[in-house]
Length: 194
Image (cartoon, rainbow, N blue to C red; front, side, top):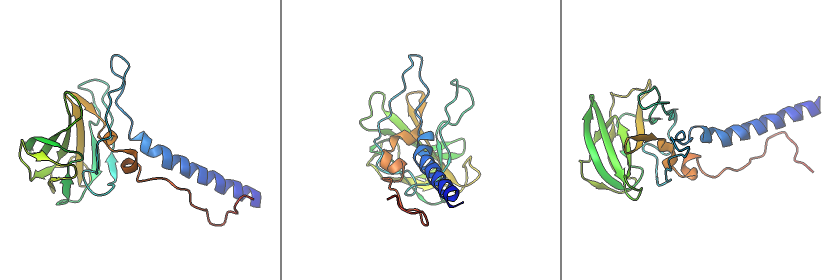
């Protein structure tokens, strides 16, 4: 009986480790292969999350099968209305205004190739203007209390290179995306191997 219980606990621990390691990878998938079979490269240039320290991801990136097909062209991050929204990397504000009644801020990221990567954040009450240069982590506005397409308050964070939508979570280096370095902790009640 004790051996079966020990084996069950060990399987539970292993399953927990697999979920902990693989779950972040599931929502950090890159874009689907293009016509040539290659994937678009997204450099991990972000130094911070757009909102909070490590916000809950309410809905991840789900690329459409075709340019006009259904999908989710960004990531929805849980956010409190009025919370600061930060640019994830240095760049230039390419748009700050309203689109379909929602506040939107777009930032072209410096040093990300030609054409540059462009991040978008909505619904945001902008505190910047088109043409402003921003540093990584600079506050670009606050979360608007209405205008979100989420059931809970959120910020939709998008990423594009020209007309191609990409996964914004790939901008985050693994230490930010995965919540820091992993370490194993002892399981209470399970004897250490001899």
